[in-house]
Length: 248
Image (cartoon, rainbow, N blue to C red):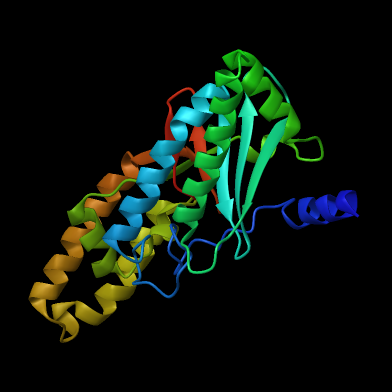
């Protein structure tokens, strides 16, 4: 019965089921939140960042190369991939009623840390304590690649360039694919038919449109991007930088 229960849990958690980023808070999963925001409140953001920072001590003890944190309505999950093994170790804790995921993750970290310290205090070496806990929680059915963060590039636009997009009625997605110049010129021609003074349009709006057109064409000559490593729908930790990154 115990083996069957364990397998059922592993199957349920085989893929991360953190609430998808969008209108949900990255910290607690609450929705809806205001468009353009990633957290429902400043306190929620501070809480998850503090708990993830707390986890770094445990991850260093495990010599983690990568780690991932996710949560469902029933569990919090911390997956760890140590430098010296190719298998993922999964630490799972049942959610407590009324707790936010950050609070449950804190309890998971404290419980695991207490177990590790108890072994060390009882004459086990630090390396043995880490090895024992990693092997005890190892899940061979999880592909290690699932917690290796992907590198994602995103547009880098100045405040003025963002304003130009609005004037041209373009989306960031229009600049993310090939044919950026064609889309910018097409948007300009479409808007010029509305605002050109020769057909009764507003001269000031047409000037703003022309300036936006020129500026975005200049951007398209040398488009700027920023990139970061992260995972889809779960927090990711990179041992090389000792940093957590929010979900993509």
